[in-house]
Length: 321
Image (cartoon, rainbow, N blue to C red):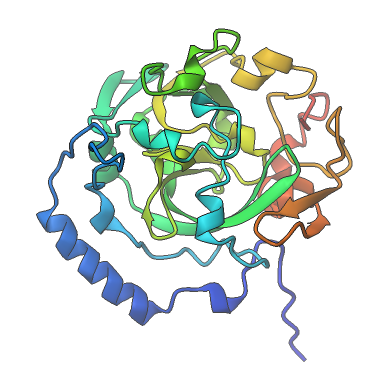
């Protein structure tokens, strides 16, 4: 008798968008995109609402069913209003302040050990990539968790498009720096701009993802618009938001939180329930939007089948934040 054993990353089939529904919505979105302006006004309107996103017609995109999670999706209203984004403040309710972030024009610098250092527009990057949706677990180092549907493209695809040289060992990513609209960046004790990095084999892993959308729409500002890193086997502080630079380097970079407090926030930051944060346990996590329900934390956040081999030869490293 055949028995299906659901793996750690699988979602219940009820969470999958039916193909007929996706096809109808995608066709409608394509029509909207054809009439959309390439550039939108970069400033927030007088009423305080951000201007329409010109990429709205690209979403929703087809869900990649290889990446499944046996956990209900977090409500969109929760995932878009409970956020860490220190550029806009230290509370979890920064979503209103983040609406001040202008998204057009948005340029991304690609430099370091690459064949062609260049600056490219976000919209040009989108044209070069193939978009898909992936449902991933998200685990914050503060011991809370969500499950959300990201839209975007594999980081591997983007790295290949950047044409790094063979001596590039790490990928460094940096967030925008604009204290005029991001009041948190006026705090001089933080090492702005927010900087994160991955080893090249991590960046090329199939799970590594650049998100440009969320819940079938362009990704909101508070969640890291217009593009952010998603690495679901690591703690959330690795997921650098609103990226303006990708640099390929030979030496391991000093990352934002590592620079602030290396004893608590390391470079690798892989999820491990058996390794406590110096100030709290990591053995369980609170599922946001469930009234405080807690569940056991999983090694590598449940993605060990995809990533454990990356660290076989790194056992002398501090792999857990």
